[in-house]
Length: 329
Image (cartoon, rainbow, N blue to C red; front, side, top):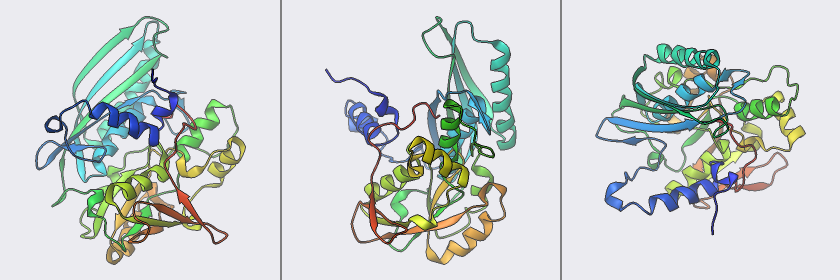
């Protein structure tokens, strides 16, 4: 009998297979055919849902409350949708500290206030001691499109440039360092709302699509775009921004920064004509200090992501099969 493994939560190949096995039980007419992290319920309104089980619950740069709001709001933002309403579900273990819960909710409220995001529905459940690890939060966010057409990977064209809004892997590296009690001075999660800068670039006619590089990191996002569009992608290793702190943690723990989760980094597809203006706008936002062009969409090697390495070779980038670090979000 086939069992669920921790790798099914990686955001990579096993996650895709698990999702496929769930969806095949639904008749096609009961499933929205959108391959993105959120889906449109009509021409303008879209929704998304996400659950958060991160451990530790408090980490440099954030906590589970902040992460829960940013995470679902960002899934909307990368489609050009302004987050407007949110439902929140709390599943708590018997004996959980009420003051600790209040701290996480205050963090969530701070993000909601910054976004103008209204808590419109909610639910609470308490389970017996030992049934879960403290606290799990689920958020469902709804909003309306602010672009003439929906942003999405199907808009990508050969020659389009690929940009990351900041350095990669900071959230995953921070969780790894916290979990293994590693001293990484200056390392903080990039957990943040992306809408603050995305709303400033929506006027660009050449803006094709965006993706927040959460579970599975940048590498998985690139693979999803290549496989979802049938196009090839080429990136340059030397062009991908990775901080010294993240590199140090990867060296110690044997991680690949390409697959470490980000919670405040967007992968952006844009036409060459608008790349310079995009970088100029991003450069003015404090969340995007390390924004960089990392590659482009190509007609060659369909559905494959290739990375030109620093030594001149070509490395094939595939989705991770296992789980480097469970419960990062």
